[in-house]
Amino acid sequence: MPTSPELCLDFETRQIHAGEMIDPGFGARVGPIYQTAGYLFSSFDDAEARFSGATAASVYSRSENPTNAAAGRRLADLEGGVAGIVVGSGQAAIAATLFALASSGDHILATENLYEGTKQLFLGSLTRQGLRVEFVPESASDADWAERVTPRTRALFTETIPNPKNQVVDLERLAAIAHRASVPLVVDSTVATPYLCRPIEWGADIVIHSTSKWLAGHGAVIGGAVIDGGRFDWAAHSDRFPQLTTSPRAGVSSFVDRFGTAAFLAYLRTVTVLEYGPTVPPTSTFLLLHGIETLSLRMERHVTNAQQVAEWLERHPLVAGVDYPGLPSNAFHERAKKYLPKGSGSVVSFDLAAGRPAARLFIDALRLISNMTHIGDVRTLALHTGSTIHGRLTEPERLAAGITPGLIRLSIGLESARDIIADLEQALGAVHRGTDAPGHA
Ligand SMILES: *Cc1c(COP(=O)(O)O)cnc(C)c1O
Image (tube, rainbow, N blue to C red):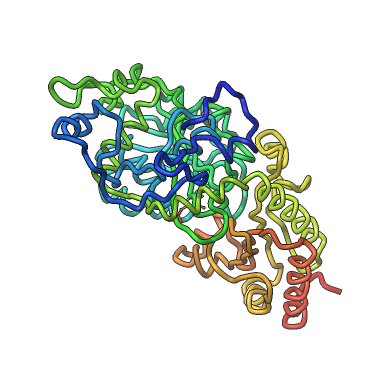
């Protein structure tokens, strides 16, 4: 029972009701987990009709499951898109999107500051399979961006708030650059969530999430999502996207003809996801839906805690710098005010002036805060990314990406800010005792 957008309900209401499904059997108020591989066909003719797509009922859970479909509808609603799908992980969402848009020999433009796993996917498997991914500094001039576009370019890929350094991107400008290049802007908006920023409102065409982070929000599931903004004019760029604009086989019209503005998502679901199979278990989606129901409340607390922690860290004598756009001193503060008026997310990174030895002392002294790789948990997490996520890079590569030897990434959770800060304070005390920290009296 999808909620009609005409009702213009508030975000807080839609996160609970949009796209919800009422169980037809028992009237269960909470959407059930449809833990089933397949679906009974009522007759010979019904089976044929469902396979042909003439009847829009589920056939097989690899690409169509009612629990997963409810989450896809809800996320599409919250992002202001026309259709959405949930898949097995954020990585799967990115890979599937690019497999749907591009073929071997095609070219993808991407901003330079991206989640490290995405960079590895782009430079690893996607490159090996024949895609050419070109990273461009976001600050490149319009002319520099335009020069990189080729007839084989198929997308411009970026992130709303790249972690760990939180260099908030200028979505409006990137959308204009993508559209001048005749390609969609694809935005991984994991760190912002639709509560803090909705990229489609700024011109993005496709939004991706790792739902493993704030959307599910409790550190218990892995999942991803793709949302179709429904605005990109595929038909006007038939040379670049023939998979959407030409007939797939005799007697069948194109995805654009059959699905209109939702053509991309229809292709992603019925071709890419069906063929590659990056399916998410409906049990995970059940937890995701529960997380989304409280998204606004959790994000409000995440960002107020993060702001307080960032302000506290900025004043600490052992801390050489804090990367949080909510701080007026931050280089991305003006952009954050424009794109993230409700708060700048809850990744707060900071640089220990005394470098790697200080980072080791700090991490090993933490008591409340968990030393682990993940973000968007209810728990506060800390990670020295230079020796973990960015451990494979060379030192010059790390420094070029701003990953200094003392950089610590925090994902601020929902504990009390006082308790989070107390743990940071005692761990920084251990750093002070263990190093001749510069700048400390
Ligand atoms: C975690 C993350 C991913 C990958 O998501 P998984 O669910 O871990 O596969 C992609 N992009 C961003 C920005 C992330 O934080």
